[in-house]
Structures are given as C-alpha cells and as structure tokens.
Length: 146
Image (cartoon, rainbow, N blue to C red):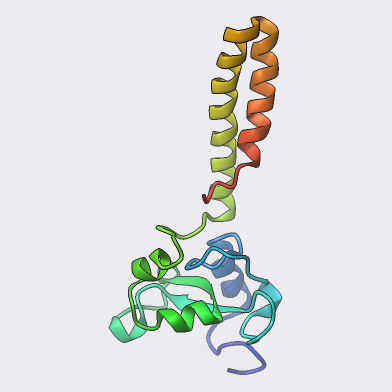
C-alpha cells in the first residue's frame, strides 16, 4: 500500500472496477464509497476483491476483479464467491451502471404493459393510460438488483 492505494491499481482501473457493480459490494450488495478505497473503518470502505482468489489461480484481469467491503473481502478469504454471496442472500453481483439502466427501462415497460392492461379491463381507455403511466413509474423505481 502506498498512500492508501494498492500498488498496481491506477485511478482509472479502480473506477472501472467500482463501476462494474454501480458502487455496490459484489458480495453483500451494500453501498460503497469510492473515495474511501482502502480506508479501514471509513463508511463504505472497500478494496479490490478477486472473485477467484489469486491463491487459487485467479488473475488480475478485470473480469476477475470486483469491489467489496474490506470486511466482506476478508470474510470471503479464499472461499468461492458463490458461497460468500449466498451468506448474504445474494446469487450474483449487482448490475453495472449500464446494465442497471437497461433493467430499469425493461421493468418500466413490463409494468406499464401489465398495469395498462389491468387498468383498461377495469376502467376502459382512460384506465389504460393511467395504469400504464403508474406502472412505468413503479417499474422504473424498482431496484433491478433485487
């Protein structure tokens, strides 16, 4: 460690790792704070976690690197990621920023169709419009990671 940063991780690389999960821990899915990288005890403190640990042949390729709370990373140790996520009731990492936007749009469309149809069945054409509008808002507001 030099100045709170692990040797070998540039600011750009840390940003790419952090953005892979939209700033959420890939093990417990709680929020991380980018500026608290490697600052033990700070709110949302995190470090780079190897999904397949280096001790088990994991690499430093981006597809093996995820952001994780320091404590989550230490608790995982050399265990598999699947078990560590399961301990937190999770089956996969949180979505990236791009994937999160796409999932929210998909949720909005899905709920707009469903509630628009229900509104139309109950209240006719005005019900379609109102139901679709409310469904779209509700769908977009859903957390796509849950």
